[in-house]
Length: 387
Ligand code: FES
Ligand SMILES: [Fe+2]
Image 1 (cartoon, rainbow, N blue to C red):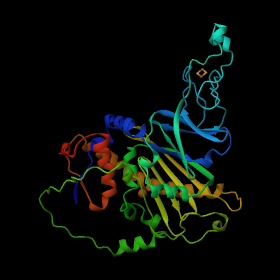
Image 2: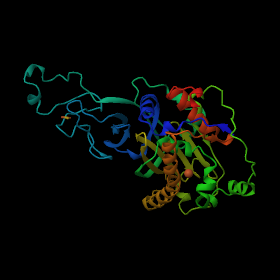
Image 3: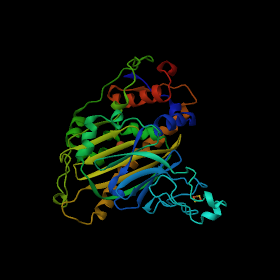
Image 4: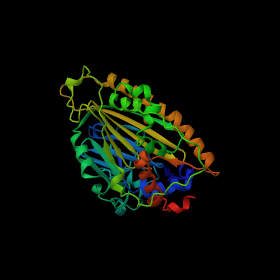
């Protein structure tokens, strides 16, 4: 056992959410989505990052990203969450041909009385954001001087992104969650909870793990006085260590569409790529890819975005009904977690006002690493503040 790394305030107070906005969400690379979501010229999708509307837009052969706020009076290029449009503001028609500089103002005389000045843009532009595409994935970075992608993700992980090949048909759903986004990011690093929370949903597909679990015996404990467990004194992890891949064995049998897909990731593995800060990306037997994004909207709420994409098809077929049913079962598993996490949030909120001792287990190393980075690097609190 270990002294708990976290403080309950981290999950409820707007002050911590503000540190996260500045030092995580507007600084690091964030997985934005699958590139097959925007296949044609003009296709776009929106990503809300701490209240900022980020547009990921395919213009010609290029994928660009920018803050969807027009420098005239705050109009938008895109009125929907995804679709197809030209980079023109929908309020009064200002045009930004490359998704950057202002390149045209219709009814220019209305904006500039002086005819001699009418062809000047005054340097106005959409706020461009850095984009990095690898394999089927698009990443964005809101920092003006983004850190190198390789500083955030290891060569091993980048090789897995590349190995994914390209995605084809996909589906995306979003829903609101009323707990802190970190509870979800930690939950997907919690390798023990599936045995308790998803026992039925996972038992048939992870036979080896279930077998190990069933052979385990409950340890009988003697009640003791309140113990002080050791505090982890090692330095906080490097950013690159917070994202990693793990791949439990997995057996889901075979499906009618297996022969129609280019399954470039292992067929007997659930390949789980945990991407710091807010994304869980996984391959289910190479048969489909799923991306879960946890996008904070406040200290106690976030938007959950779930995208499911098929790998490249060897022969085209209508995968939409299939994706709908996969999405339904994925959603069922997410709901199993939400029932618990919503209650955890309530308890953390209650305990942030009171004295209460939490404890963590040795198996939680990846979760404690996540927390230590948040505590020391993001909130810049030392472990000693925790008593
Ligand atoms: S707000 Fe964009 S053109 Fe007016
Ligand atoms: Fe879960």
